[in-house]
Length: 200
Image 1: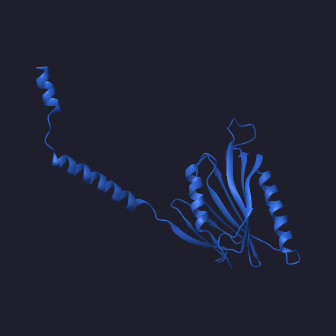
Image 2: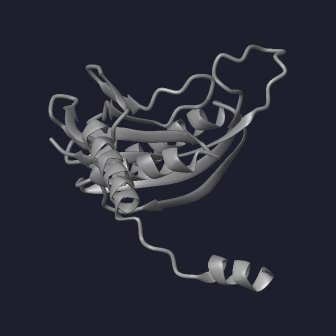
Image 3: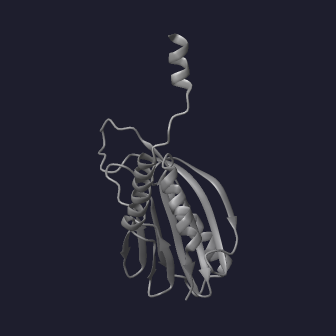
């Protein structure tokens, strides 16, 4: 009897075409619905047409006179954020001196935004379609949003990039910030930076 049972279990079974067809229809339908229901990426311009970038779905835009801010909304956590701000460039200051002074000012501003500020990488190279870009990648420890002094909250490590972009007589400050544990947000910001173009 045991041998008969083993033969029955191991015996080939007929393929139920109806079941497999229903499974295929369910998978195909869900994939099609996901593709239709997901908002598409969109390209936006800001700062009087001087800045252009492409955003993934879910990012909001705040476009003011001198600053363009894009971020993905997040409740109670540090949202992935990118900003491009127009910088007033004095005509009486040498270009190299202006870059040095502005980068020092930006770094001090970042260092005061949290604890344990560290520069991870720095360099100079043409980027964002502009003539020159000086950049620095950083890490800093910050309290989560809405936290007040004395709250029992776990501080978060925030990473990001800031860059001084010079294109002709125009200068711009590009900055990003994201929770170090948010790998998806960091990838989204990298994708946005890859599409960022700054020009007159």
